[in-house]
Amino acid sequence: MKVAVIVGSVRKESFNRKLAEYVKNRYADRFEIEILDLSVLPLYNQDIENDMPPEIVEFKNKVKEADSVLWVTPEYNSTIPGVLGNAIDWLSRVDKVMIGKPSWIMGASMGNLGTVKAQMHLRDILFAAGLQSPVLIGNDVYIGAVHTKMDAEGNLTDEATIAYLDIVVANFEKWVEKFL
Ligand code: FNR
Image 1 (spheres, rainbow, N blue to C red):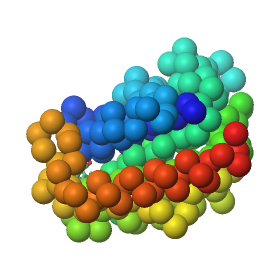
Image 2 (cartoon, helix red, strand yellow; image 1 turned 90 degrees about the vertical axis):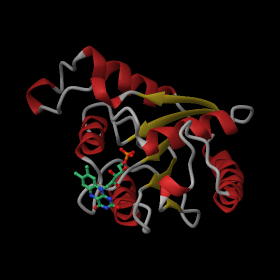
Image 3 (spheres, rainbow, N blue to C red; image 1 turned 45 degrees about the vertical axis):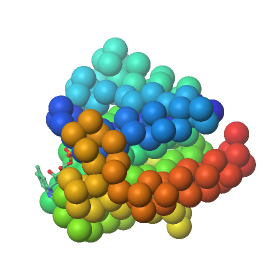
């Protein structure tokens, strides 16, 4: 199964990017995972949505080809970061590649709440508001105090977090089957 990963941070040492890499490596035998690069996406502009820049065409094609999308988001100002909003705006227009495509969500922050508010907003945007993407519920991954649970190479070091992630991934695998 192909999973496209959309990470809402473009900084080099991003915890969320490292979490995405960790998931990609840990479950490599179960999913074909590609982490998409949001840093190359131009800002959404309605003037060019029918003549999309090549970076957007490529980005949307990768999402289209994937069986599901994993969103790994930081929390900025109690909501999703702008780079994620920009990607969502492109995905929501013209060829609406997210319609019916299943999504699951994770997020990490140094604070204790682990992106809970950003994920609430993201869930609403994905399912209800714009993209019509069914979202895995009841298996929320909020990794708070991430700097204490990950080493410099991006490996999770907290056994309880790893065990929980294994359970969520197994639940996701069962849930997503009905969309394949
Ligand atoms: C943050 N941060 C943050 N954290 C949080 O838990 N709730 C919040 O509302 C915010 N707001 C916020 C705004 C802005 C503009 C920045 C730059 C940061 C802290 C944030 O969680 C932290 O920088 C993470 O490390 C960002 O994720 P990455 O880049 O490490 O993946």
